[in-house]
Image (tube, rainbow, N blue to C red; front, side, top):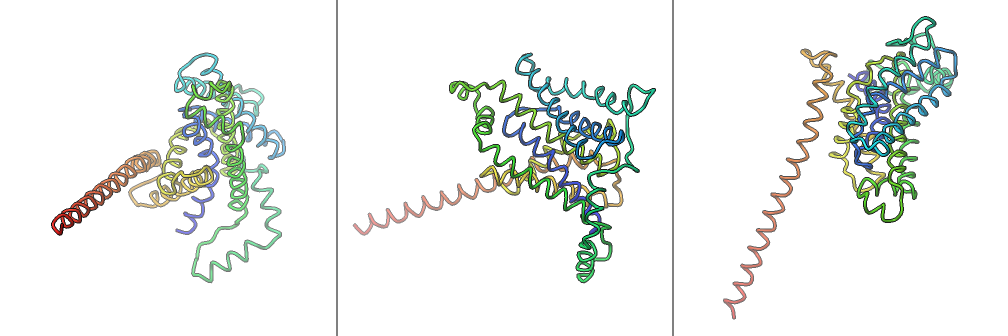
Length: 342
């Protein structure tokens, strides 16, 4: 059980970066961007291809981020300059990226134009390089001995992966918090709230939308690059349903932790991604479910996350109405009592 939750937390922290990108488009920009399913694979394919060709994992990851940024900008250009519906522009870019991703991965083979997957089993990744440094510190043994004292039997072989992804995700969270409070970040938020209003202040909403979509898909591609290095492979179909996972993370986090401030909301998105992966991991441990049921479980989780807050809000509203009615009754009783005495 502990190992299942531990692995889910590792993946959840990586997927949280993707969820932050989805939050940026769906909540901040109010743009239904389906490019995510394609740009996630673009990040994975670019990083895996460059690593397989002998480039340093850090450089490969940075190039993957740039590739995702370009993909997001192209979606923005299709919408703003091509006047294409937001939903349709994301779908068109997602379809185009499928072929582009095949081409990217195909560049690792001499006589192949497209390639559906790339294994990284014997390649150096960000995680393997950090693990080599981490293993000399002796922290793994200390943490495992501590957990053994609490009766935990099955322990992870290394804590290096969860530490490095946690540091990266927290850093991105604080950068996102800072950016959304800058002049450009506030303009992007205002564009999502009211385009006409922000245009009245001579802001170029087209540029802001393109920039917002670029940054969103850069985060998605970054998450894809990390997932490829974490799972040691890249596959052209690994991005299917990523938009649903991202939305589930955002919805779950917002429902549990609220959205009063930007800092609280970004924390909620990260926590939502981790909670989602833990729920999924626990659900898959049920005997009659297997890995093929992941999409169905995801759909159920999203449905519950969408419906449950509505019931909670309705319940709170009913309680407020009952309280207000009781207050009015009490006031009337006091007034009638005063008149009787008079």
